[in-house]
Amino acid sequence: MREPDLSVEIAGISLKNPVMTASGTFGYGEEYASLVQLDRLGAVIPKGISLEPIEGNPPPRIVETAAGLLNAIGLQNVGVESFVREKLPFLKRYGTPVIVNIFGYTMEDYVRLAERLDDEGIAGLEVNISCPNVKRGGLCFGHDPRTAFEVIHGVRAKTSLPVIAKLSPNVTDISVLVRSVQDAGADAISLINTLLGMSIDVENRRSKLGNITGGLSGPAIKPVALRMVWQARALARVPIIGVGGITTAADALEFLIAGASAVQIGTAHFTHPRASLEVVDGIRQYLRTHGIARVTEIIGSLRNG
Image 1: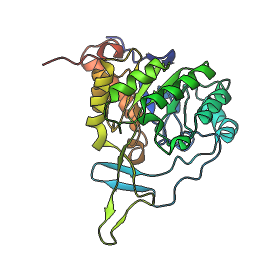
Image 2 (image 1 turned 60 degrees about the horizontal axis):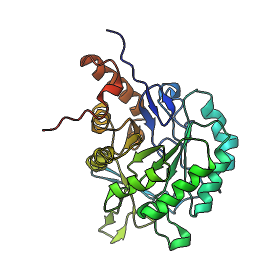
Image 3 (image 1 turned 135 degrees about the horizontal axis):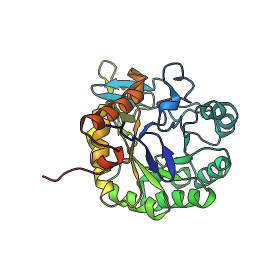
Image 4 (image 1 turned 180 degrees about the vertical axis):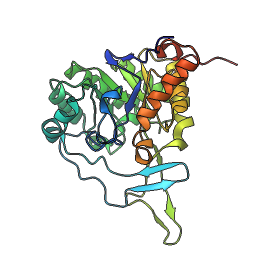
């Protein structure tokens, strides 16, 4: 039997396999380059980028939980100009598509970032709409279908790149948000971002995070993410990228079968830097074992009953 074909296409972006790194868990790629062959990944998504550099929240910023990680990093990053000048050239050496995660605190931030990155040779934009909209009292863009629509529509109008909307799970009905960003022109959707959580030190009765609350990631959130991918797939007209608690090839296969066209590996990198590559190898072995010629054959193949 010939080697199975792992290639997929997401919003016009050709990937050699369906495995990407999740924003915020893989640095700018160079931190992992001595451990991971970057040219074997489907795509690299580095840390989220804002217009200006951000120092992030005061420590402590990370707490380990029973089945995951709470973080309140505060989106620390070098800002778009330093990213383009100092980080992007390194990532381009490997020929692996680079998808840049962007975020802002006003609608104008998102639009300016989209314009600035349009001609930098990247493969696409992943738009993080889980940020507080400072002009509307700090509510997250992604919690309101109207503001989510406005951000994606604004970015779509200012870039020729594929636009991927990254949605928050901290909403009542994910279907409403899926429809909203899709109608706004999103070319693909990433599901999910972290779940809001907290952890308390009972000895001093204080939160273990300097920011009080943080984002929960890791194996604890996988069932939630998987359910939302399946739910979104039923109504989405664009590809879905599954993310949330994927640590093994079996996890990734669950997301593909539920309807994701690709997956992102996140928190697993902190305990096992080569997790992404092992997921790629594990998917290939699964296809060999089951006599499946192309990974696309299992996408959305969940059986009823």
